[in-house]
Amino acid sequence: MPTINELRKIRLKKLEAVKRAGINPYPIKTKRTHSIEKALLNFERLVKTKTNLVLVGRIRSIREHGGSTFLHFEDGTGSLQAYFKRDKLGEKNYKFFLDNFDIGDFIEVRGILFKTRKEEKTIEATAFKILAKSLLPLPEKWHGLKDVEERFRKRYLDLIMNPEVKKKFEIRSKIIKEIREFLEKEGFLEVETPILQPIYGGAKAKPFKTHLNALNLDLYLRIAPELYLKRLLVGGFEKVYEIGRVFRNEGIDRTHNPDFTMLEFYWIFANYKDLMNFCEKMFENLLKKVFGRLTVKYEGKEINFKTPWPRLEFNQIFKKYTKINLEEIHLKSLKKEALKLGIEIEKGEEKPEIADKIYKKFCLPNVKNPTFIINHPLGAFPLAKTLETSPPKLANFQLIVAGWELVNAFSELNDPIEQRRRFKEQEKFFKVGVEEAQRMDEDFLEALEYGMPPAAGFGMGIDRLVALLTDSYSLREVILFPTMRPK
Image 1: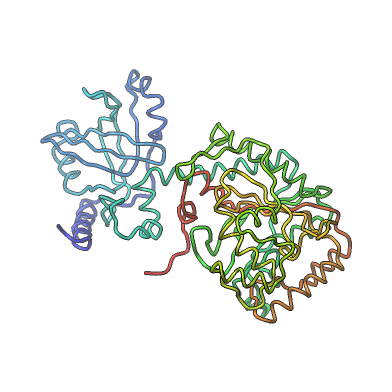
Image 2: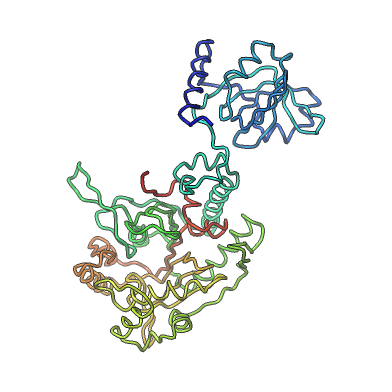
């Protein structure tokens, strides 16, 4: 069995043979008349009229039978069989094809459509042309690769060899399109906010840091667009949204990638309860438009998105699966309980952070069908409003489906005095080593002092949503080029 390097050398010799024949193996244009999809859709008419077509695509198989050769080729829309006959093409051209073309090459085929005796739709070639010579062979048994990460490293091969993978990314594109269309119809304006920011904010996360030489200025890749979108509320916009990449310098696992796609939108004069109703409406619309139904299969189980969805208080679900009453337990006792449960506690972590770690390990996996987890403990989200309850809780929710945290949303804090106090509190955590703590943003506080109307904000991880709706175990399966350790 020849090695890849040996096969490459053989193909290089073929490339040189094509050039010696006076043919450009990478021509600048093609005379394509139809996509394969269009040819198949209009097959009967094109056969009847004996229309001369020019189709193009990548060769996926070649089968030689004496003076005849059958090959399958595909473009981005479909696959078709081509029939090469020595008598039709001429001895010289036919031999040139057999000697110099390989599986993986891109080809232009001119000819007329017909059906074989086995009723297979086929184009009979009267002429052909090389469009791109491939120098490396396609993998024969892609699924059999021992290094499964190779699929993600070489996504282009994954897409060629696995149609179901390509389908996932087509669904991803449709999901984003439908979300955009829904928000636009609901009166939201799409905006763009800075990716490079002088101070990061909007989430608890460690940022990526860079330097702008022109201004001799340290900048951060955004961890969220939140604080800039809220500035737009101050500026008079009523409904704004952004779909874009955010960056967090944290661990990589099945639910996390260092850069990912986030949807955030903000709606003035609305609160977190309005957003729960709106979220149900958005998902209902999305599922119907993309899949035509309100159920999806995930890891062998059916998930039903029929509304309304349950609303469970954070303390309620926490107590159910841990037997710990979060409202009564003190920090010292919670730390002891966390250690018993195998939770690592880092320096500077307070009650909300420790509770969140326990919750993610012991509560989240038990939530299968769409559920709103509402009213997290005070301190969990420094940008959320507080309910006037005893004990006080946050005016927020998270949407959990099949153990995935899809949405984080709340009534936005618009009191500049309280926001400054919370930022100061976060700065204390940062100084004792909590890198994920939010930072003091004076410019944002100044904007709040000009007056931000009551508003509700919504953040959803697009990659997690796509993973769930396409029955994918990991984010790597739905991010075209996930972050990988170099080989």
